[in-house]
Length: 208
Image (cartoon, rainbow, N blue to C red):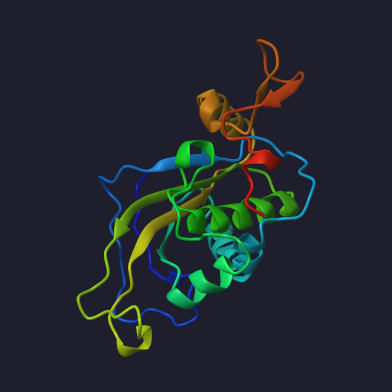
């Protein structure tokens, strides 16, 4: 089930060179699963809108490899990016405070939101799974004040998968604990009325 793949930087424009693979076996991940299509009102997270081009590329890779994990290296926000979003009242470097912090950082949460939004808009079958893993420290050569001088910036392991649709996907969702589902049955059975689950976020959880 665990697979490794070609690694790309997400969140910065300059592509990584000299890195071909990140091995994910043995790492602990926090899982967020889109259990059902949910109508969400209000404006989207602006940081997630910033991530949409990268999210679209990742989503297409996951769609082409349906049922397999697609892994990337999510680079931490740069000084310039942190300054830009701070001016808008958003601290992209803070820990994730939504859904028990499963996305680990506010930055990763934004990419996750962009991916889920794309999946919802696509109308395709199959649950989207996103997992944020361990932090990867910067290489000794990296200087955050001069990122273009060389070296690799700090990052996090990030991967996604679109499960195959149909009854197999439905059973996979139903096996999840309520804490990992966006909506859960209001009663004792699936298929009736639903209520927010542990992965649901409301307006009071937003910083935008």
